[in-house]
Length: 290
Image 1 (cartoon, one colour):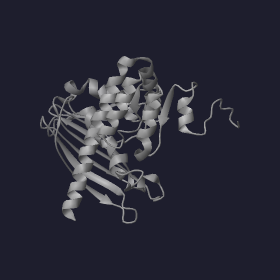
Image 2: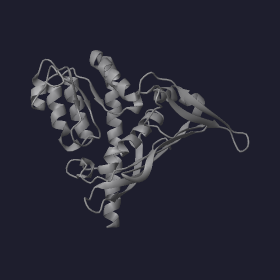
Image 3: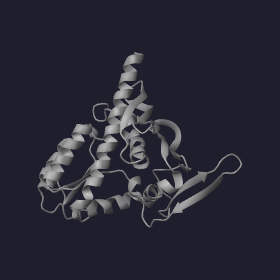
Image 4: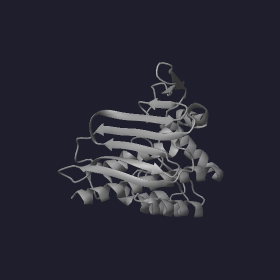
């Protein structure tokens, strides 16, 4: 009433049941997210959701429910919607040749143990789920399409008070010989969002692969050549809007056009598959070290 919002609800089920709602953004904790996704899809609502998901089978159940009810499904990853990501993928072969390595790091400082990210019931994978999702998505976006995961190795550290995974690091090896090395954490002394894409013909470096400039544009450094003969170019990709806003526009487009939906579902499934593999590898290493 204070802000003249025309529709407000006392529960998510009431929201799903409302004819005034076309789409729902599910931002609840990971462990309780699938129930709401499934109910929303069954009610014919398009769903945009926070990540990670509980597991790849969970993602597939959500995707199947959305397909059965003519609903769009997208995860809430911002950077993939920015023109920088699209530009790198479009010109990948001519700039980089054969891409054989994606290395990424996403670290920040989260000292508040009351945050749900430290609650192992609500967020079982801790930093590996919350921040590591972006490492996995970088591999999905920038390695050659169609690569199949061969092996995964990983290690985690746990918070001494809560038992939450506060950092993770690992290597994903793919069937074509390419690799993705990754690192994520909640106890870094500074924010780190580094990405390096290495190919036989060049290398791209990004020091903020999840963010953009204040004007909406985003940069990356392109390098090629050998010792003493290398060249580098700072490339700026303009955009009138940040990735977050473009994500909502792409979600609206997918809601309106069913032909646009499978690309987003596939990206979510592939990202979750890598995350599951990394998490299992980290747990196995932890058990072996115990």
